[in-house]
Amino acid sequence: MTRKCLNRGSRQLLVAALLFIWWSAGSVLAQTTSETPQKRREVRRTFSLTKFYDTPTPLPAGEPGQLIRSEDFEEYDLADGVNAVRILYHSRSATGQDVAASGVVLFPDGKPPTGGWPVIAWAHGLNGVARQCAPSLARNVEHGPFLSMYVNLGYAVVATDYTGLGTNFRNAYADMQSNARDVIYSLPAARAAVPALGSRWVAIGTAEGGMAVVGLAELENEFRDSSYLGSVALSGLIDLQDIYAHAGTVSGSLPLLLAYGIKTVYPQFDAKEILTGKAFPLFERIGQGCSESQAAPEIPASELLKPNWQGNKLVGQYFSRNTAGQTPAYRPLLVISGDADAEATATKKIVTRLCRQGDQVQWEQYSDPDPGRVIGDSVGDQMAWIQARFADGPVPSNCSARR
Image 1 (cartoon, helix red, strand yellow):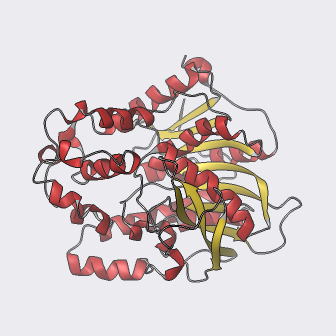
Image 2: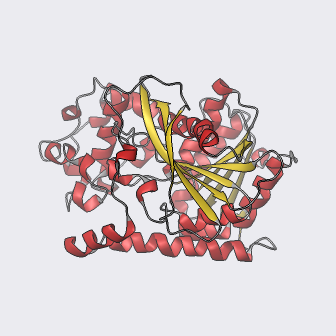
């Protein structure tokens, strides 16, 4: 069903969400300016990497989720009443390697409720694979007003950067399982750093992070964490393979990021098997910045990929592991999307697949083509669904109409 109106009582939440949209739009505009003004904006909007993010090679052994170190950080541009603690913790790569991931814990001022602050695990969208792309290095944590809204409503937010964004390891780009593990392992580390956090939690993700929290719901069949209550996917869903189905329509940097992610998950992969001679020099620099224009300036994606590149075995395996709906979700899902044709079609395909395997899915569509405004329009539904999970309320599902 397409939703056109806000739920009662959500007006104040929408204001906060719209601030988030405005702030994000400013970041996008900064990427379209000339090089020198762009650098000036990046200086204002981001922090430099510090020794906090560095780890020795090899990394001293630690259990997944074990806290390596933490630090209070008071320089973020966040709403009043929001405290921030950066964390560095042990995670696991797709190959099972012990890796370090960074992130930030946001939590309210004041005395926590009995049992600690309820927790939202945040999975962000992606804007590169370089260390400098870590959201915890952004002055507003990339989504500061939106996340501050939840903190001011009495939640703690644990926001991982994903391995390799911030830390000196390889990032797995859009790999659902890798990003999902980083989210899961951020929670025990966050509780070690901030003991006021409670045990019960939900996950929220936007863009690629939305796919990550669906992957997390599936991965929880392995973890069986009874404190995990469900996932919210914002901005719709799309299988990774479908993003690359028509090379001529994708952004110039996306083939390079794809090759980087495959190489992270499958170290034996040779990027030269799918990238053209024009693409490979750019690929070797993909880890040096977060701007698309820096990665592949004015080069069509069709000139970066070889003919029949999708026939590569490891490409196929990477796409397969990043297809949602192959394992039942451990807990319920809320999917938020717009009703624009392309977004609705991609989301419908995945939601139908999830429903057919018996998942409890509530899919809400909003009549606005802009993903940012959809996030704002949906805050009432987000809050109602999340509150119901923490209250052990009935689980809504409109799957019966989609099987």
